[in-house]
Length: 442
Image (cartoon, rainbow, N blue to C red; front, side, top):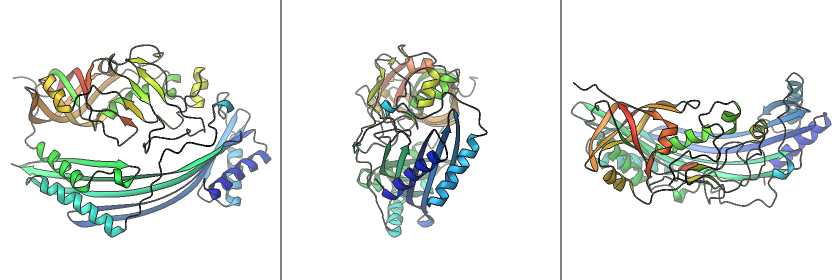
């Protein structure tokens, strides 16, 4: 644990107590990163960032105040505490606010989930990696004739969280990403698509050639897209999009939506919310996971648990505050969900196409999508029409619509092609039927 960050955090807690605060918590962090973008073989941007900051909350009974600073000197920290205390005097009492219950806090020694792998490529090395991605995109198909650029970003951070209950914890993390967006043209038409990779360790990033090749092939495959006639049909969401569906589910069963009664899944624990063959596990212990960690943003211990078992919802995503509002206990989700692992059906995307026979394969969506209160879902979309179990032609300028409650329960299968690039690992999702708005039949 970084001693400088720890000292700043503990000083903030100590000074807050001297000022009469009944409780306090603080997070201190530093980060450093580099991002390079190349377009058409020319360097477009080189960015370096270095940040630090302290954010704290002080409580005077049921009143609270927040303040932050980028100056970690003792004097600046004390000024921030004073500012937070002054704010607290003018806030209304909130009986649900406060630190977590002590028995919910994580205890040292904290597990190491292999989250820190700093990578410091030189600018020249980063430029070369970007050029390789872009070159591979152009080489993937002769119709790829332009690019929106290739980027390589490296990032590492360190933080310490402490509170007046005696909790002090922190660790280092890293996150690296590579991406390229290709543009293909033919017969007066133009299409774009991309590919990317994200990982804690540089060795887990996709090869530059593979990233570029996939981007180029995806862009070229969309050429000649046409609109569909309005209809109802099976729909498969590409593995790059399916985490968004799970994200809509997470939003509906998260504390802030539930206590505001702004969710279509109110009071749904113990009820069937997905098809019976679907299970979702939250695993904060995943090695090198992008959402792994021994404790949440409040120091509450994380745990591996079933979120959905055989289609039935087992629990919510709750912070201390939202749990108290609901009369429940924190689930260690202050700051969001940890790695969500959605069971697949043991088949690949192509096998899903074969079994589906005829329907829509969506590779891009546009617009907000879901109404968290009603579950209504509607998005602009593009992708491919499937006929006789194979891709027949690309489609665009359509809208897909349904209701998430029905969509979740009518999932026919989930592919084994999940991407390890975020906090939700789920493969291609095949939904039995959705409305597709396109052109009206003649």
